[in-house]
Length: 130
Image 1 (cartoon, rainbow, N blue to C red):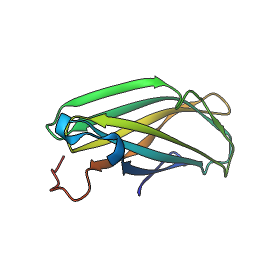
Image 2 (cartoon, rainbow, N blue to C red):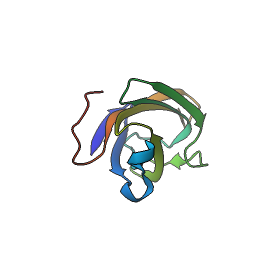
Image 3 (cartoon, rainbow, N blue to C red):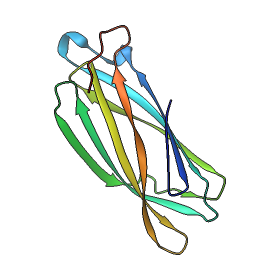
Image 4 (cartoon, helix red, strand yellow):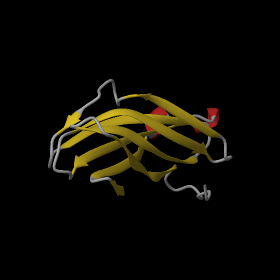
């Protein structure tokens, strides 16, 4: 598990390689990742948008930006969490993801929360340092 805490918001990430959905002979590799976002602040916060930086094993970088996560812009009360699962395809057997969430406090103040960098590696393969 990968973890980061920024501005009173804790983010845990657990990536899982999806062997049944991958086809290494066709350079298609798929991962799911589960994320838990816990609000350790004293006020409700809202996740407004995300920015992902996805880098494959060759160093090719892709930036992905969008509103919310999995079609939601969740409100997270103090001491509560929001969890979701999404996925990432790559054309290489390894890569790395990292990013940020743009959030707003109850009084409308915007702030950034870091998503920890996490490794995407096919199990039992030699790893590439990304």
